[in-house]
Image 1 (cartoon, rainbow, N blue to C red):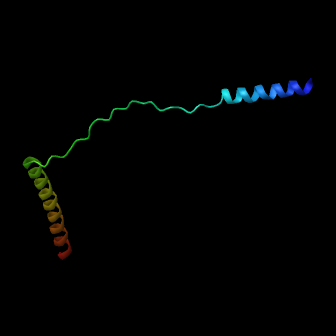
Image 2: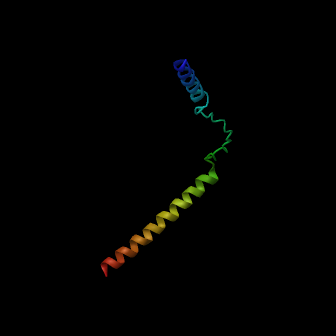
Length: 73
């Protein structure tokens, strides 16, 4: 009788542990991503990119010129 109580107790313990164990969490997040901005190669964009590139190039050239003047002095 004592063995049968232990067997029943162990069986119930295993059942409770499996029934109350961690359940895998399902990820049901509904995230809506905003569409990424697409680059359009329009004449305006091309012009703006060229102007920006020229400004950067001029700035670098001026810095090089100043560095060369300082080096030659």
